[in-house]
Image (cartoon, rainbow, N blue to C red; front, side, top):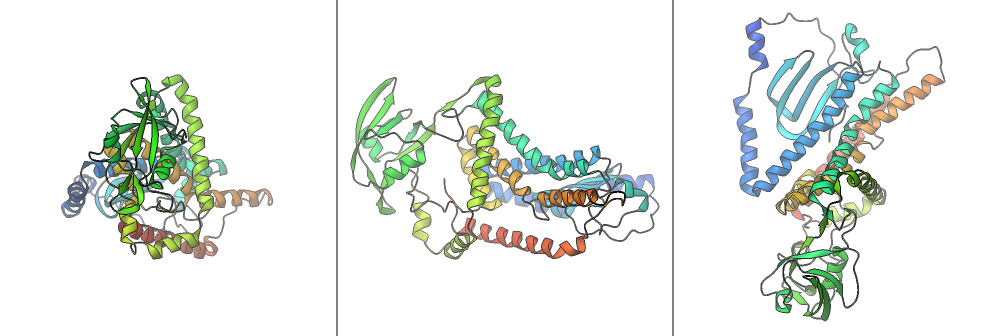
Length: 442
């Protein structure tokens, strides 16, 4: 996760004379072959191990993070601040070049990015000549613009992707928050669905006269009825058919029913004009759902999931049913409070991407909204922490007119920053562990 918080800069040193033109040109275009080879090896390994879909998702994540940092960069430049670095990736530097006062470049670990704005707080030492270009000396609106610019870019990306979905690709059932109808995309040979004569492009409407609001609810009901005989109402070529089916039994779990179909969501487009309002509406719906998830997060349940992760192989297997099988029952589904790491996110994104452009775009709508909200949590070193600090400083200034700019003493906040950073690291390590030992399956 990116943020504007960086370690305090080193004490200002006397300026060194610029290198000769030829030498400066060499520095600007220098590349580390060894580090570049490491990056290429990581990309090759990902492609060999996971195929093309993870590569596409990782590239999309890099572009998403670049746009996040571009938001900070543009806001800082607009605010008259000095930006000294703009890098994609972390760790050792692979390649960089200097343009004006900013060094742009690429680092070996493509897991994030950062923009360095000088004078973020009272601990950053800068050249006195540059004090007027620091973040801390900018007006409150301009500091706020820089702090929220990253999340704003995520939200704009989400709305733009929703617009593309509504205008050109189509969304499930006309809404991303509901999938009231779905089509059979594939019937597993030898399955209960195949024995009943279900076909690709059949649209399942009812089961024993009951309509289901979502495919997940439908799948959960099927999973709880192994061996039962039910009647499906199926729309085929404009005609509604009654199809009797004896629900099969999952090979990995005799207590779980299995129908044996892979769904294709019914997608619709609404045209560019209506897509504007529909995109904003769905954006707010998904934002509310994400906030609800954050609000319902239980550290106790999360820790229980960490402790039990990987200790029940059968449960992991049941989350990954045979192709075309229904979703697991509610007792086997991943914990609703489950948080995933970047490893898990790439895995889910790759699964969705393999199903086509719709899955790819849906994934990036969700991840943009999630990261945008997460970055605005009101704690340092996240962007929301800078919003809180800038607002507090502004309020203090209002109550001490004529006394000049007020700056929060970051020395007092450093223990909080380190504690939050440690929690974020712990969260990252534990979620990666769970995503390896007990991955979430779609």
